[in-house]
Image (cartoon, protein in one colour):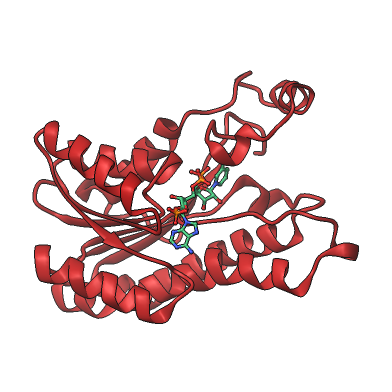
Length: 244
Ligand code: NDP
């Protein structure tokens, strides 16, 4: 993917950061977006000192204005975005009985609507170029369901539906749209787990361990590559076998 322009949302830490590093290593020019400017500039330095090309842009996926500005800045610097990785995501867990309307809408607005805003920002350019890769980071719970995460699960299942619909809308323009559904991955999102919860989860994973951000980044790079050009509308599980 030498010289291709990639945009990774939620790249300031965890899975997004690793995806940006891997895409840059594979030769892409990577635009990294999130709200934490300081973490993004550290990432850009890391990519540049490894010989790659990167640009940090301020991005809040819940704001249409911010999305518009971020993608305009990306295009001005590097040209039209060819690979979009919709990774920005949050959780606000709680049983449905007690879930506030804010907890519901903030999670849907970030994880699902945020991804759609970013897709709309790149669609036209990809259609013009007749080449594109859109990769949505869903979750194993978007396939299995999970008590206490009705908002998050709905957003992640929604991303799978969005992936399928868009693959059908955009296939004729040589744009592939796929999802990656991670299982439990070692990041800030899972660091809050107690030792007991961690042991209980690990016991249900056939491969016997929690995954690393690089496990997801490898899958994203595979789907972004030219060689994956006949795969679209697919959800790739990367979960150690915990849900098949
Ligand atoms: P982290 O919490 O470590 O990182 C989340 C990233 O999203 C941060 O970079 C954060 O940046 C960004 N983000 C959050 N809100 C916004 C926003 N409004 N606008 C722009 N960026 C935002 O999470 P992970 O790395 O663990 O998760 C990454 C993705 O993978 C998420 O979509 C998550 O749902 C999914 N996933 C994770 C799993 C896991 O086990 N870790 C399992 C399954 C799926 P900032 O705060 O700087 O804006």
